[in-house]
Image (cartoon, rainbow, N blue to C red):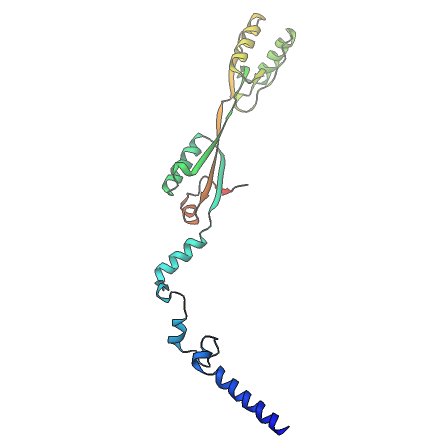
Length: 210
Protein backbone atom coordinates (compact mmCIF):
# COMPACT_ATOMS: atom_id res chain seq x y z
CA UNK A 1 0.00 0.00 0.00
CA UNK A 2 2.82 2.35 0.92
CA UNK A 3 4.59 1.50 -2.34
CA UNK A 4 1.45 2.41 -4.34
CA UNK A 5 1.17 5.76 -2.56
CA UNK A 6 4.81 6.57 -3.34
CA UNK A 7 4.28 5.70 -7.01
CA UNK A 8 1.19 7.95 -7.22
CA UNK A 9 3.03 10.89 -5.66
CA UNK A 10 5.90 10.41 -8.07
CA UNK A 11 3.56 10.39 -11.06
CA UNK A 12 1.78 13.53 -9.81
CA UNK A 13 5.10 15.37 -9.49
CA UNK A 14 6.13 14.31 -12.97
CA UNK A 15 2.80 15.52 -14.39
CA UNK A 16 3.07 18.92 -12.65
CA UNK A 17 6.63 19.37 -13.87
CA UNK A 18 5.69 18.42 -17.44
CA UNK A 19 2.75 20.86 -17.54
CA UNK A 20 4.96 23.70 -16.31
CA UNK A 21 7.85 22.90 -18.61
CA UNK A 22 7.87 25.90 -21.09
CA UNK A 23 8.29 23.89 -24.33
CA UNK A 24 5.13 21.97 -23.44
CA UNK A 25 3.11 24.54 -21.44
CA UNK A 26 3.23 27.45 -23.92
CA UNK A 27 1.71 25.56 -26.92
CA UNK A 28 -1.07 24.42 -24.61
CA UNK A 29 -1.67 27.95 -23.27
CA UNK A 30 -0.92 26.82 -19.70
CA UNK A 31 1.81 29.32 -18.92
CA UNK A 32 1.48 30.96 -15.53
CA UNK A 33 2.39 34.44 -16.80
CA UNK A 34 0.99 36.62 -19.63
CA UNK A 35 3.88 38.90 -20.51
CA UNK A 36 3.25 41.69 -23.09
CA UNK A 37 5.87 40.48 -25.61
CA UNK A 38 4.38 37.01 -25.51
CA UNK A 39 0.82 38.36 -25.95
CA UNK A 40 1.82 40.51 -28.93
CA UNK A 41 3.64 37.58 -30.52
CA UNK A 42 0.42 35.55 -30.45
CA UNK A 43 -1.61 38.30 -32.21
CA UNK A 44 -2.65 37.76 -35.83
CA UNK A 45 -0.77 40.41 -37.88
CA UNK A 46 -0.21 42.80 -34.93
CA UNK A 47 1.54 45.24 -37.31
CA UNK A 48 -1.87 45.92 -38.96
CA UNK A 49 -3.46 47.32 -35.79
CA UNK A 50 -3.96 51.09 -36.30
CA UNK A 51 -5.00 53.59 -33.66
CA UNK A 52 -7.14 56.36 -35.18
CA UNK A 53 -6.44 59.95 -34.08
CA UNK A 54 -9.38 61.63 -32.25
CA UNK A 55 -10.47 63.65 -35.32
CA UNK A 56 -10.64 60.62 -37.61
CA UNK A 57 -12.35 58.53 -34.95
CA UNK A 58 -15.02 61.20 -34.44
CA UNK A 59 -15.53 61.48 -38.19
CA UNK A 60 -15.93 57.72 -38.54
CA UNK A 61 -18.43 57.61 -35.68
CA UNK A 62 -20.40 60.50 -37.18
CA UNK A 63 -20.57 58.80 -40.57
CA UNK A 64 -21.81 55.58 -38.99
CA UNK A 65 -24.60 57.31 -37.09
CA UNK A 66 -25.73 59.84 -39.77
CA UNK A 67 -29.26 58.57 -40.46
CA UNK A 68 -30.79 59.48 -43.82
CA UNK A 69 -34.39 60.73 -43.74
CA UNK A 70 -37.19 61.07 -46.30
CA UNK A 71 -38.94 64.47 -46.39
CA UNK A 72 -41.93 65.88 -48.26
CA UNK A 73 -43.62 69.26 -48.59
CA UNK A 74 -46.85 70.48 -50.14
CA UNK A 75 -49.24 71.12 -51.62
CA UNK A 76 -47.49 74.26 -52.86
CA UNK A 77 -48.50 76.94 -55.33
CA UNK A 78 -46.12 78.19 -58.00
CA UNK A 79 -44.52 80.83 -55.75
CA UNK A 80 -43.98 78.45 -52.83
CA UNK A 81 -42.60 75.82 -55.21
CA UNK A 82 -40.01 78.26 -56.54
CA UNK A 83 -39.09 79.19 -52.95
CA UNK A 84 -38.69 75.52 -52.01
CA UNK A 85 -36.38 74.86 -54.97
CA UNK A 86 -34.20 77.78 -53.98
CA UNK A 87 -34.08 76.56 -50.37
CA UNK A 88 -33.02 73.06 -51.42
CA UNK A 89 -30.25 74.48 -53.59
CA UNK A 90 -28.95 76.59 -50.68
CA UNK A 91 -29.01 73.49 -48.45
CA UNK A 92 -26.84 71.61 -50.92
CA UNK A 93 -29.61 69.28 -52.11
CA UNK A 94 -29.25 68.81 -55.86
CA UNK A 95 -32.07 68.37 -58.36
CA UNK A 96 -31.23 64.67 -58.67
CA UNK A 97 -32.15 64.13 -54.99
CA UNK A 98 -35.80 65.26 -55.13
CA UNK A 99 -38.90 64.62 -57.21
CA UNK A 100 -41.93 66.80 -57.97
CA UNK A 101 -45.49 65.47 -57.95
CA UNK A 102 -47.52 67.89 -60.08
CA UNK A 103 -51.31 68.15 -60.35
CA UNK A 104 -53.27 70.63 -62.44
CA UNK A 105 -56.50 71.84 -60.84
CA UNK A 106 -59.20 73.10 -63.21
CA UNK A 107 -60.66 76.55 -62.78
CA UNK A 108 -64.32 77.50 -62.55
CA UNK A 109 -66.32 80.18 -64.34
CA UNK A 110 -69.76 81.63 -63.82
CA UNK A 111 -72.35 83.65 -65.72
CA UNK A 112 -72.53 86.79 -63.64
CA UNK A 113 -74.78 89.82 -63.40
CA UNK A 114 -73.79 92.75 -61.20
CA UNK A 115 -72.62 94.44 -59.20
CA UNK A 116 -75.93 96.04 -58.38
CA UNK A 117 -76.32 99.38 -56.67
CA UNK A 118 -78.30 97.90 -53.78
CA UNK A 119 -80.44 94.96 -52.67
CA UNK A 120 -83.55 96.46 -54.25
CA UNK A 121 -81.98 96.49 -57.71
CA UNK A 122 -80.87 92.87 -57.22
CA UNK A 123 -84.41 91.88 -56.24
CA UNK A 124 -85.87 93.45 -59.41
CA UNK A 125 -83.33 91.60 -61.56
CA UNK A 126 -84.25 88.27 -59.93
CA UNK A 127 -87.91 88.89 -60.77
CA UNK A 128 -87.03 89.66 -64.40
CA UNK A 129 -85.07 86.40 -64.69
CA UNK A 130 -87.87 84.39 -63.11
CA UNK A 131 -90.30 85.67 -65.78
CA UNK A 132 -88.15 84.05 -68.50
CA UNK A 133 -87.40 80.95 -66.40
CA UNK A 134 -83.70 81.67 -65.83
CA UNK A 135 -82.51 80.41 -62.42
CA UNK A 136 -80.08 82.51 -60.38
CA UNK A 137 -78.30 82.56 -57.05
CA UNK A 138 -76.60 85.29 -55.00
CA UNK A 139 -72.98 85.80 -56.02
CA UNK A 140 -70.40 85.10 -53.28
CA UNK A 141 -67.80 87.31 -51.67
CA UNK A 142 -66.48 90.29 -53.57
CA UNK A 143 -69.01 89.72 -56.37
CA UNK A 144 -71.92 90.69 -54.12
CA UNK A 145 -74.37 92.23 -54.61
CA UNK A 146 -74.75 90.26 -57.81
CA UNK A 147 -76.23 87.10 -59.31
CA UNK A 148 -74.79 83.89 -60.74
CA UNK A 149 -76.78 82.30 -63.55
CA UNK A 150 -74.63 79.18 -63.79
CA UNK A 151 -71.27 77.61 -62.86
CA UNK A 152 -68.91 75.83 -65.26
CA UNK A 153 -65.54 74.07 -65.08
CA UNK A 154 -64.73 74.84 -68.71
CA UNK A 155 -64.41 78.31 -70.20
CA UNK A 156 -65.83 77.30 -73.57
CA UNK A 157 -68.90 75.83 -71.90
CA UNK A 158 -69.45 79.09 -70.03
CA UNK A 159 -69.16 81.14 -73.21
CA UNK A 160 -71.60 78.85 -75.06
CA UNK A 161 -74.10 79.14 -72.18
CA UNK A 162 -73.79 82.93 -72.31
CA UNK A 163 -74.69 82.96 -75.99
CA UNK A 164 -77.81 80.90 -75.28
CA UNK A 165 -78.87 83.34 -72.55
CA UNK A 166 -78.42 86.28 -74.87
CA UNK A 167 -80.83 84.73 -77.35
CA UNK A 168 -83.38 84.64 -74.51
CA UNK A 169 -83.02 88.36 -73.82
CA UNK A 170 -80.38 88.39 -71.05
CA UNK A 171 -78.08 91.18 -72.21
CA UNK A 172 -76.06 92.26 -69.16
CA UNK A 173 -74.65 88.90 -68.05
CA UNK A 174 -70.97 88.12 -68.64
CA UNK A 175 -68.48 85.31 -68.02
CA UNK A 176 -66.72 85.76 -64.68
CA UNK A 177 -63.72 83.82 -63.36
CA UNK A 178 -64.65 82.27 -60.02
CA UNK A 179 -61.49 80.22 -59.53
CA UNK A 180 -58.49 80.49 -61.82
CA UNK A 181 -56.81 77.25 -62.96
CA UNK A 182 -53.92 76.40 -60.66
CA UNK A 183 -51.06 73.93 -60.46
CA UNK A 184 -50.44 72.06 -57.22
CA UNK A 185 -46.87 70.97 -56.44
CA UNK A 186 -45.69 68.36 -53.95
CA UNK A 187 -42.00 67.76 -53.28
CA UNK A 188 -40.30 64.63 -51.98
CA UNK A 189 -36.65 64.19 -50.96
CA UNK A 190 -35.97 60.47 -50.75
CA UNK A 191 -32.69 60.65 -48.78
CA UNK A 192 -31.43 63.69 -46.87
CA UNK A 193 -28.83 63.85 -44.12
CA UNK A 194 -29.47 65.48 -40.77
CA UNK A 195 -26.97 68.23 -41.65
CA UNK A 196 -28.71 69.07 -44.94
CA UNK A 197 -32.11 68.97 -43.24
CA UNK A 198 -30.93 71.52 -40.68
CA UNK A 199 -29.91 73.87 -43.51
CA UNK A 200 -33.37 73.86 -45.14
CA UNK A 201 -35.28 77.16 -44.67
CA UNK A 202 -38.30 77.24 -42.37
CA UNK A 203 -40.65 77.75 -45.34
CA UNK A 204 -42.09 75.71 -46.83
CA UNK A 205 -42.72 73.27 -43.99
CA UNK A 206 -40.97 69.93 -44.50
CA UNK A 207 -42.28 66.80 -42.78
CA UNK A 208 -41.29 63.14 -42.63
CA UNK A 209 -42.61 61.05 -45.50
CA UNK A 210 -45.79 59.10 -44.83
